[in-house]
Image (cartoon, rainbow, N blue to C red; front, side):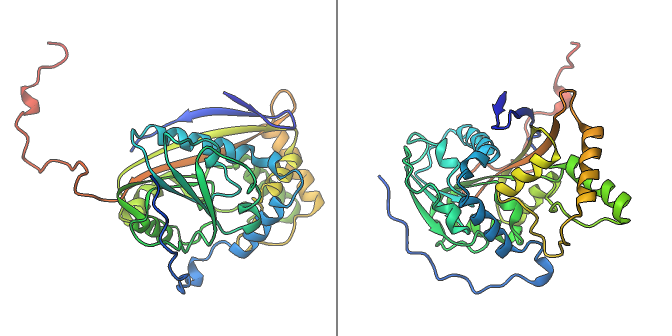
Length: 334
């Protein structure tokens, strides 16, 4: 499947799954006074809010929704695989509203959109959707909801900027009703490996060292344990790759900035020199370039599903309770 981008680029889908009547919301609880230890702070979330609000204020802001829209569409596909209707749903890190574009009344009654970037949250406030919605400006790391509030929680392309991911998952589990589902999508560690490698090689060549200019990201192997630590059960993980073609590395960097996806780690260094950027662009093109002169950018998307425990959920049988021995089964050759 291909999704066109305004600069004649293509989003190429490659899929690789590895399965390892509306009640009003209760009043929000008082914002938490809990602070995250400095050792756990990888991202400067104040900078990230500034970046995303600046993105929302651009006159062409919607032009750069293509990646978030694509991931939201794929996440909703996974929600459709669950043969259940969820009346009240929360979208954590909703942005301007990407998931709500793909849901309908057969899936839910009401969607609450929450985001820390106020300008981005209200960018599309005049749009109409099939599902009723409300917007809440709050920090994704401190969810202002009572326990057992939502039937389902969704999060698409937001959690890779969360410092305390285990704590956020625990809050998500608490605000879910028993047997409620959480579905999330976030970028993984293989994202933009072409850009990362090109920048590192250029820095070594021109500056004699390497400094981080692409944010660290989670690995698929970590998500299962994180979901379990948060108290979620019946977990499912899968991974997706989206490859976007750009005319050159310069357009890729411009788009990332316009999306509000610029570097926001605390120990980030100053801007790269023009000489280093030009060298990185040449390395990118020579090592990864396509025959048509474009360059690919790979976005690895990690999907996770977990459920809040409930006595009604299926449980594994007790050890030794089997009544048929595998030894009695005939071999395929017989």
